[in-house]
Amino acid sequence: MLQGELMSENKIEHSRSLRSARWFRKDDLPGFVHRSTLAAAGWSREDLMERPVVGILNTWSDINPCNLNLRDLAEEVKTGILEAGGIPLEAPLMSISENIIKPTSFPFRNLLAMEAEESIRAYPFDAVVLLGGCDKTQPALLMGAASAGVPCIFLASGPATPRSSTGGNLANATGVWRLVDELRAGEVSQGDFAAFERSVMGTVGHCAEMGTASSMATICEALGVSLPGSSLVPAVDRRRNQFAREVGRRSVRMAAEGSPRPDEVLDARAFDNAITLLCAVGGSTNVIIHLLALAGRVGVPLTLERFDEIARHVPLIANVQPAGEHLTERLMTAGGVPALLKTLKPLLHLDARTVDGRTIGEVIETAEVIDGDVIRPLDKPVKPGETLVVVKGNLAPDGAVMKTCAADPKLFSHRGPAVVFEDVQTIADRIDDPELGIDENSVLILRNAGPVGAAMPEWGMLPLPRHLMERGVRDMLRISDARMSGTAYGAAVLHVSPEAAIGGSLALVQDGDIIELDVAERRLQLCVEPEELERRRQAWQPPLSRHVRGYRNLYNQHIEQAHRGCDFDFLRGANEETLPEGLFDGWVGGW
Image 1 (cartoon, rainbow, N blue to C red):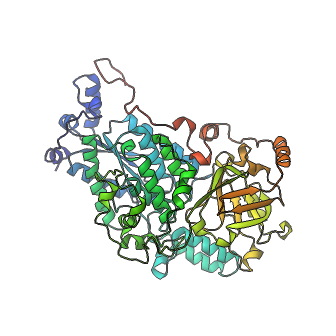
Image 2 (cartoon, rainbow, N blue to C red; image 1 turned 180 degrees about the vertical axis):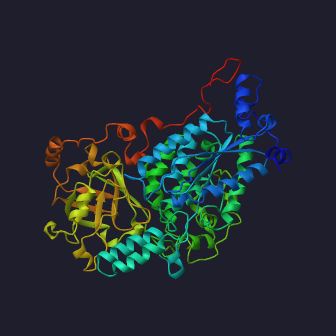
Image 3 (tube, rainbow, N blue to C red; image 1 turned 30 degrees about the vertical axis):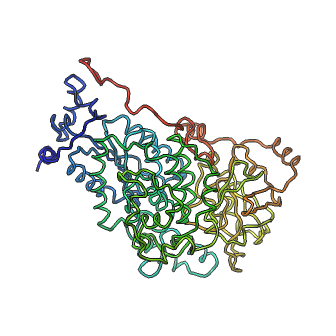
């Protein structure tokens, strides 16, 4: 059956003027140009004059296994769009391969967000489907769509299914960190590690523990931008294809109705719900940065303090790695995100809207917890205490974050001497050097790894010295202006703001300075007299930038600090313009 014939059987009614009408529904030269151009793609004049247009923004790439199934999912989305009477138009976007792209994936989040925003605004899309998987593709697509203001719905690639999970709960990346620790401590051999390499990445899909990708996919349901129950279905599970078709069908209705727009879903209630779920699953600290950036795009005044306020009241109820025992597939079979949200019901804004057409309260009405070990009751959490905290003090005046549910509680109140590393290569070269005098009370400091200093890589889980690991030490206090993989663990204070490279207090720390962390008091203090700190500040010189051209030059000039989400300063704030400039009417020629 031809596309036009299939669509003629599935006409939908819409009473509003579609955004795409400006391109197609006019008898003039621009209308002719736009329609005749797409005739080569198989679309007739009647199709374009009568049907809503849905863009499919696809971040598929051969070099990104997390997103490798998105090509197939895009075809399923197209089928759903055609079934509902819409026109699907797929547009490829940059694919950010977390493990491979250098210097780190983080700066490219903003580049992809800009590409997504401009693609949505520049093309005749009445709604868009966002297809992403790997860590930065998900927030980037949401940020771009939020700024473009066109109705959008998100579908993740889905978690991988590690081969090692058949013999135990050894997830993709958390397993790597654990095996590396055991290798450096002499507990496993190089042969064992080589065998692990051959088995760890068994299928396509993103991290199968509550790393950044799974955390972002999960909280997208709480934000209301994904279909309920869609986030945790494995990438290789055919139920994800079913969700893709339903996403396509739903996108056509959103296109026809022009609603809900991103700002109608992404309000303060949605962000509160997302933070609540993030805490409940022990999710990645990277999500904090992404939510701050996304909130800035829609004009919601979200702050680090709000994360700490909510975290004080939300227990860890999802028994999932790295804070718990299981993988995300087990969480799905236990009831998934709808069951988690139902358990969190007393802590949620139930009237928050979703792209599903229902409120969060309506979504969770029929949800049910199937496995009470994986999804715990509020009064019987996986671990006591908060899952994350925000700390401040003279070492982090604008704040820093710590994933307490993945750290040794013995370090929550700690006082010790600093051992300072200027960059990660120095750590790699010297961490095992006995001349450094590192013991278990030392505080490892990494600086110049923030957004300006090094584009904020995931270096925050600093390695421990071999001689301490051989003695059984598995955690130490570590502080940096870097990020940490959501799959990682340990007592790491991250995202110190302002960062060292722009003169933050982290730049002033010297070897032997006493550092004090008090999680209960939310305090991170450099125990040096103010007069001495001022003397050091006056003597400090900013490092010379190596980036004098291209995107990294733009990035360093306009990137905001971690407590504001590391977005570009010129992209904050709600955007009222959803239509592009251009030649749309009359009989004057030109493109």
